[in-house]
Length: 223
Ligand SMILES: N[C@@H](CCC(=O)N[C@@H](CS)C(=O)NCC(=O)O)C(=O)O
Image (cartoon, rainbow, N blue to C red; front, side):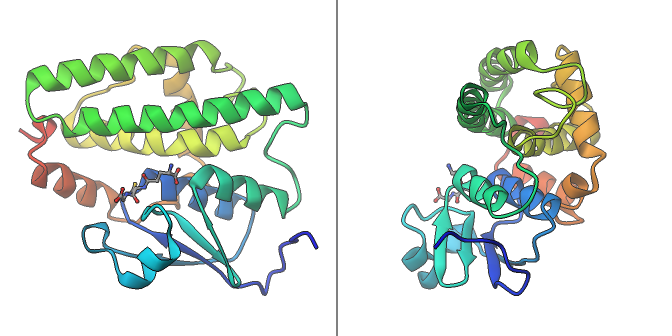
């Protein structure tokens, strides 16, 4: 029997407050109007029950009743499929392309992470060059109609949004606009960050937790 979301279904997202992959699933849950609970864990000190549930030891993990799902892209597609109004293109080719760019966007998140954690100016410049390479690819594909594919928000937008939360935090905390050379991405970011599902997808003190995290890691941005 296929799963169809029932509002009384117990859904719990195992999370870490600063994790962009968790944030992707929170955006999808909020956008799809799915009721859920969120449980934060400390990734530096993973509880045994979490390690028992999560084959990769990574968040997000979604507990759907007695079932367990992992990997944000998989969780998001599942949440999309059990609710009305698909956020994936119906055309198989376009759907395959979106899945490919969703995978690519995970690499962009990793490049952004490495850039924000670089410990000195040289490492920062090197990491930023790698990040910019990836951002150029996204910039070339970003529509100027509102969202990544066009006028309608799709899952690819929900997975890109956490990038913009972190670019905005870096700009506000350290006065560095890492999207200055990417006008279409900048506009996409502003559009996404204005959505309540995106602004409400992180904890209220996100910027200060993010600053603390970078400070503890002795990131060059914080010096
Ligand atoms: N491909 C995974 C990546 C998830 C991931 O890397 N999560 C990080 C936190 S942001 C994590 O749990 N790291 C713990 C670890 O690697 O030990 C997804 O999309 O869900």
